[in-house]
Image 1 (cartoon, helix red, strand yellow):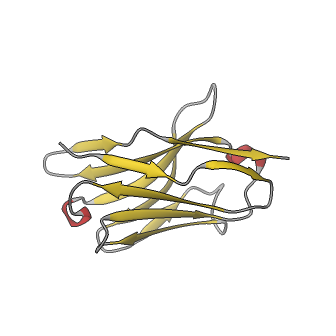
Image 2 (spheres, one colour):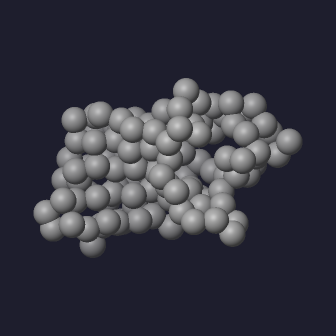
Length: 117
């Protein structure tokens, strides 16, 4: 069973920065892609950023230019650097790992990010 453990959330003022970490219990090479999603109160979970096995990245339009996803294969960790945070970035952030064959999604427990004005 794969475990994903997020950390790094917290309370920050608008314009500030946070870095989230997602530690995987097995080699992240085994996943076709990893990513970060978020869910704000009363809203559906939405994609924030993806990183594929070839280190290709993809971002939601709302975070482009402010957030950066990266990976450290030696530590089996994926990061989300969040800069110039906005109040609307407030949400629970979830780490996701996906395999194509078989098609399986693994999720972390989530970490709260709160941005104050």
